[in-house]
Length: 250
Image 1 (tube, helix red, strand yellow):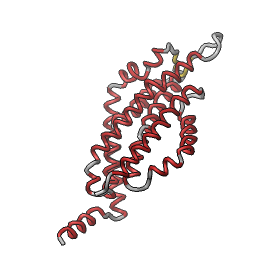
Image 2 (cartoon, rainbow, N blue to C red):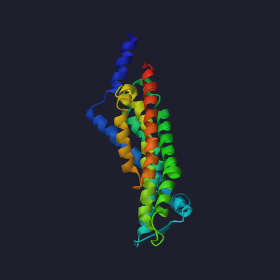
Image 3 (cartoon, rainbow, N blue to C red):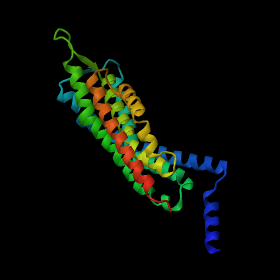
Image 4 (tube, rainbow, N blue to C red):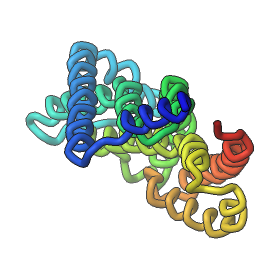
C-alpha cells in the first residue's frame, strides 16, 4: 500500500499541465541563453587570441593569403567568432538545460544519469570539434590552396574562410552526438538495433548524402573524410543501441 502511494506521489510530481510545460521550456531556454551570453562575453575578452592562435592557425600553416573586403569586415567577424565560441563554451549548460526539461518524462532511476549524459554529450561534441580541426579542415584547406594553375593566385576572403572553419566544426560536433542519441532513443523504446541493422544500406546512402552537404568543399577528399566517420558512428550507434536495450529498465 505504501509503495502504491509513493508511486502515485511520484506520478503526480511528474505530470505537468501544458502551461507548466511551456513555462518550464521558457525557463530552460532563458537559462541556456544566459549561459551563451556569459560565454560570449568571456570570448569577447579573449577573441584576439582565439582568432590569432586557433582559427587562423590552419591559414598560417598552409600559407593562405586572406583578404578583408569590407570596411567593418573584421569587426563583424570578431563579433561572430565570439558568439559562436560562446555557444561552444556553453554547450554543457545547453545540454544540461535540455535534459532537465525532458527529465519529467523519464523514470526516476533514469533521471540520475542526467549529469553523466551531459558529460558524455559535451565530450562527444568536443571530439567532433577536434576531428574537424585536425582532420577535416587540414585536408580541405590543403586541397583549396594547391588546386589550380600557378598562373592564378589563390587568395581567400576572410569571411569565407571563417564560415568554412566554424561551420565545419559545428557540423562535426553535432554529428558526433549520433551514438548518444541512439542510446537515448533505444532506452525509451523508440529505436531498436534490429531496425538499424535492417536499414544499414539505406542509412549509408543518407549519411553519404549528408557528408556531401556538410562537407566544406566539393572535393571528394573532404567528402570521404566526413563520410567514413559518419559510417563508423552509425555502426557504433548500433552497438550502443544493443547495450541500451539489453540493460533492464527498473
